[in-house]
Image (tube, rainbow, N blue to C red):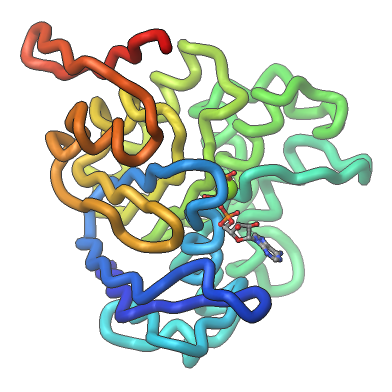
Length: 252
Ligand SMILES: Nc1ncnc2c1ncn2[C@@H]1O[C@H](COP(=O)(O)OP(=O)(O)OP(=O)(O)O)[C@@H](O)[C@H]1O
Ligand SMILES: [Mg+2]
């Protein structure tokens, strides 16, 4: 699905934390949102899925304002993996992932809901822990549970807020590969992330946010030494190897 952010301004209080954001994201794009702490990445993601109500400007999903899409319909189209989830409710992994089917379930899960859930658990390497309680898993395992739950929603749009922050290197690579595959299948993927190397390796587009505005936006090659320096105030070198670009920070 196509997402169009049209001059989105958002304020929690008086001062705007997002200022006239204009971005268009195509079906099948994998967009990395990068920027310093507090630049507005999480807020932007919450505005796209309607958790935060956009009153200035608009978010259009295939031309329809997100405001006018009913909640159940929104949950069928968009899945969201939050930056962190602190819950100590004892829920088993299988049940947590099954919850992703909620927008489709009438009064009890069907055979295919259960099958699909088992398949997603396999795909995310969570079979071995499927009967454990989520809050007793490691941070990285919990993160994979939330990604699994989002995938179980069969969304057209997948919004993820730092989904790889707690993952070890192997699972970071696997998760980003998986998200890329999903984008290849036509899902629109938007990920807030801090690792600019991973962003430029995996994303089809990069949107750089600075103080609530779009600082730069385009293909992965916009992650230049100049941009990174201006955005984060850190000196970096861009190294080219085997056709890929790597951003190497220099010590102060
Ligand atoms: N619930 C809230 N109430 C008031 N202000 C908020 C709230 N959530 C975030 N903010 C403010 O909005 C701005 C953007 O925050 P946001 O969480 O979107 O940044 P971010 O880019 O996701 O940062 P990080 O990299 O640390 O996750 C910050 O100045 C933050 O203090
Ligand atoms: Mg954030």
